[in-house]
Length: 86
Image 1 (tube, rainbow, N blue to C red):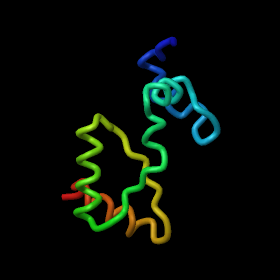
Image 2 (cartoon, one colour):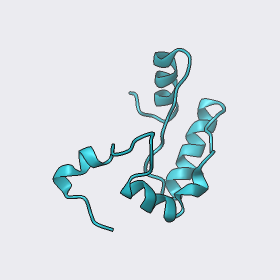
Image 3 (cartoon, one colour):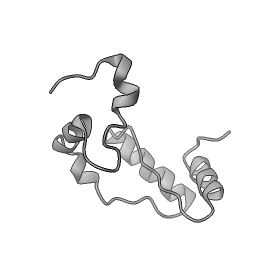
């Protein structure tokens, strides 16, 4: 696999987004990323924070969050739950 030059990584990460796996996605999938597919973070704020901490302890460095309904409220609730807002 060829490494994407650093100057192009901010663009390459979006290659194929929501359409197909790009080179980095494929590498992550083949390294075991597929085992995380289908996991959800639901529950109280404490439940969500505990699960995020468990995932981080397992080496997860990114979480995709898809809010629904009142987007602002949901984003703020998630940010509060995981300590992203002061």
